[in-house]
Length: 270
Image: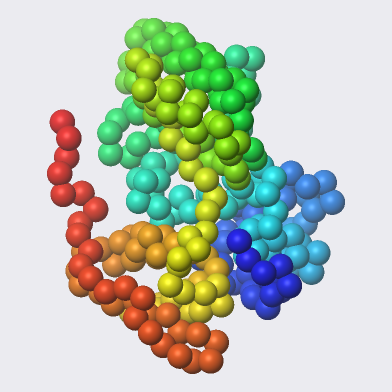
């Protein structure tokens, strides 16, 4: 994703959306030699111990750390501005039951009682895909039992069966795409959506460029594609006509996109 040698040229304060200290401390709990770090006593993330900065830059700036905690950390950043996920809230994390283990459970903020299991995967292969399928079936059975129990209680939630499952992947085995297509074309109760970490090779800006949206400047390494930039624009500004510029380290400024942003929701399916 990024030139490892240039990673330290950038500051953690340049990561977008701005990193939250509480979330970073949760992330550091997965690393024993960092789990005693108290970030709250530092005014800025640029002032935290160098060894922690090095780790976080590998996660958020370079993207060179490819383990499960790092993939999850980057996904949670992406979720904050993504069209797909910005209107879904996290209701549970690291759910560990005998019959299923789910990394995140999201709930739709518009449609009541619709939940989305999220599985964070380093490398998705056929064996793991079918293991996840079984776990989602078990999770649906769990929801049915919970709904039956909730009928006896007043004002209790009644969750609908899972219809959509997200697989957030560092990479996938080249043959698993056929299995995904096969599973999604079958008469199944739910569908998989696989989202892979990716940087568009035809991106019309560089990592060290400043992306300029009105009076906001965001470093280019935060975005894998122009589509990511447009998602930020939609969430930041809403509908209207806009021009987005990039500015190189030498000060050269160019237009990378101009056009009209439509409202997030034009039609609603009933």
